[in-house]
Length: 139
Image (cartoon, rainbow, N blue to C red):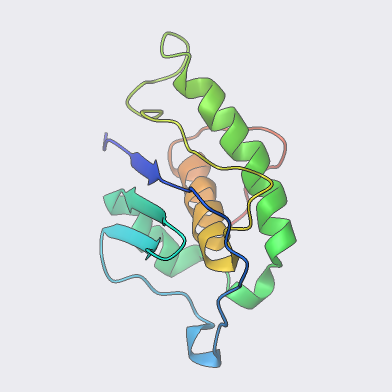
């Protein structure tokens, strides 16, 4: 089993959304390590999971399928449960839930960060047969 690491250094709010052009409509990843960062507002998302890239390229819906508010609603529920499991290593596999995700519901991280978190947490639940509650992940 692969060790899954998510590092979220989400520190300051992001007040602007990334404009997505038509060429970005079909999601595509080229690496096993996914990094989204913006030094100006000091956030960084790093996803290290070799199976995620294939899943994302085959299953992720186009960015235009979601609204930012939809992604945020899912993410806050799933991240809250993820963090609960991190602090309970005797009940949940500590190889799956290694570190907490610093995600603040009142911070605007923008569309792209929420899109990638949502897709990773969807993949994680389907691939590792985990349910983070609230919403059932869909392909």
